[in-house]
Length: 320
Length: 320
Image (cartoon, rainbow over all chains, first blue to last red; front, side, top):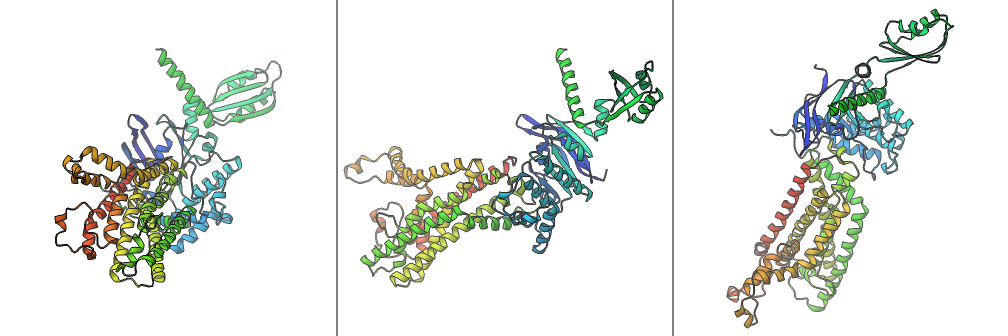
């Protein structure tokens, strides 16, 4: 477990009576993209602030790059970059000046500052507006400037809080590309979001927050198996010759757990991707196969199903 | 457990940045314009008046600061009135603006402590006020030399420099107060209104209120009233109450330093003056002794207000 750059054990944050983060445990390995996921107010931002030593920890232990952020915040903050939710800059300063302030706070020597700032701005494609005031920047540009700050710092961990909320689709795609690029350079990325498809697109593992607790933790396929049961849904559109019982043949395919028929469409629940075998079964029955598709398990489906199931079980408990 | 690293890491960077912000801000430009304009007017009036009345005054330079030119107060009186306005203008949104611009969490995610940010802003404000006061001092001394044609002696220069330092302490009180408000109130408008309200209270209401309260707390003695004299107890109480106002402390300290013949700031009995050569100047050291309690009071108020702001700021949540 020496590869873990962030570890949290029994991390708890209480404000007077309200428990905002309740006894959460997770590890983040070096070089992975880890997603904190959940509705607003579930405790994601508070968790992030505790990782950075920007808010006190009520109980539990947290280590970032081997340091305790409460006692050694400077060591942590020197090596971790943070992009807050709707990041702000000094409007009356230019992009380069804003970064120069951070670079001075980091204590970089003057000669190095210039080089770091320009290369960071180039990375996020803001080099041509380096000397424009931030006042004129769009939201997407501000987010990119925030990312440039993390690149400029040479951070080993990038913590991004809701980095894509409020961005238009193209800006979102660009931004996610930049995040993946960071990963290729060996930067560990921790990102929080409530936008499920984006998290799914880039994250290696996710932690699902609900009311201050982590209720699910793992990679998307793992979670799918855990929550959705059979992970795959294969749809087969085929016209079978009369007499051939296609439904039974499909059910006989190894891995298929259930078949639902509606007209010429068969919907298979399966534990694996059974498309090749399903096609073979249709052909063997002398059927005409017109379409074959598989639904990869989506985080959205997992999320929705998880909360549905939870509501039901709570309903049962209430009734009892 | 001690926290790691120095609380003042990054202090210099913050001071320089804040100073350059203030120097280039329109708000400060307008305030300085106002102050300089009033300084020029009051000095011009003072010079006209001095030219009319006396050429025999041994402290001609100091008279420039203290002579009343109706309808305006003296230069020193004007400063007592205007310094709070400038200090409030500098400090009323020091911290709240970082909150509202959403730069606070980003800046605090850099390797500095909150101490450096708060201290840096305070020191930068003091530097701005110091530069302004020094410029005004040079203006007055220069104009005095030029228009009156009498070179000031060393004692006068020293006294006027001490006056400058006292004015700076007075700046500190109001700057620390304004910054405290900027920490407590998220809205800059609220902080500004409260600061200006307190300023007006101390300028216009407190002096009269102090005298009324003194009559209540320590009622006049009938024997003195019959003789048509003020009761010493009442006067002392009134003065004690009035000294809760920093404006009063500043006015008294300035009186002791700029009018070398001032022998006491409170009421004194006739027998205490026995053997004194009335109207002669005291040495600077003696004048300093008279003004010392007032000076200490100003410095102590600054420290108390700053510490209050510091404690609130350290406990505040950074999230918007």
